[in-house]
Amino acid sequence: MNFDAFVAQVRENGWNVFGAEVWERGRLLHAFGDTRDSLREIYSITKSVLSVAVGMAWDRGLIDLERPVLYDLPRTCVTRMFASQRAVFEKITLRRLLTMSVQDLPMQAEGAHWVDYALACPLVRPEEASFHYSNISAYLVSVALTEALGEDLGGFIERQILAPLDITRYAYARCPEGYFDGATGMKLTVHDVGKLGRLLCAGGLWKGERLLSEAYIRQATAAQVPCMEGGYGYLIWREYGGFSFHGKWKQRCFVLPDRERVVTLLSHIEAPCPELTDSVVRHLLSEGTM
Image (cartoon, rainbow, N blue to C red; front, side):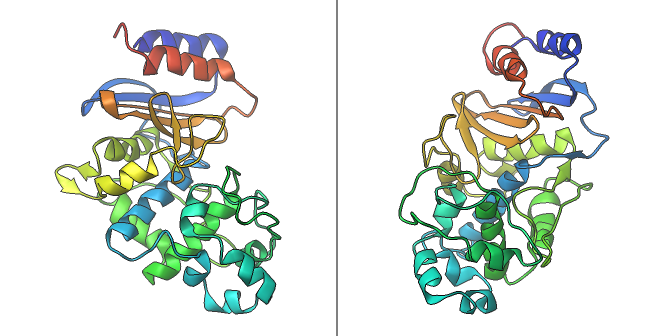
């Protein structure tokens, strides 16, 4: 690892990296920029927070990943569906939504009634379980989890995830109907995103307390479906010998369990910037000079 070389490249290239941290074996090795002061948009890293919430519900026996999602959605929405559309969605389980393996879903729900919009989407190939990235998949998981818990998912995340991790400053978005968005919309600091990575890296333990089971983490971080990266688990990416959380404008948290290393950086870079990824891989994920 060569953290100084990474920082030098960030500065030389003017990459809009707000801050970065590297933790290894429970110790903070390196930090750059604003890692603790400012809340930043984390975009689709929100999905990985949702995955942790799903795991906590699964650990408690409150949700069945193999059950069709319709069983955990609001009854009023399901009864409004045409019978032919209900028959199609009977083939879609929570596991399929978590693994982004439902074909034909648009990227984003629209209008004032996102649940109805999502359930009206025509699915031509409901049985085809191959990778297809859509915010609607995560959103439906969020709604289903809310209904299964019988309480507001935002409040559940605050109490069961954020509070135990000592995350006291945060923001998150809701859909027009009031459900936790699930796909995007959270704001956290660099340091606090890293805590989520460290929780999973430690097998679900935090300061000696078990927050999440190892059984769920194994499933969530495995390559459940192939994609152009290293595979996709339960709203978590598999790559570089470990797994990662992604946001769309170069927000990243890389977890390498074998080395107990967690690398987090929050940026805002809308243009393609493969050089930044190359720098992270070469200088922060590799072995070598400290």
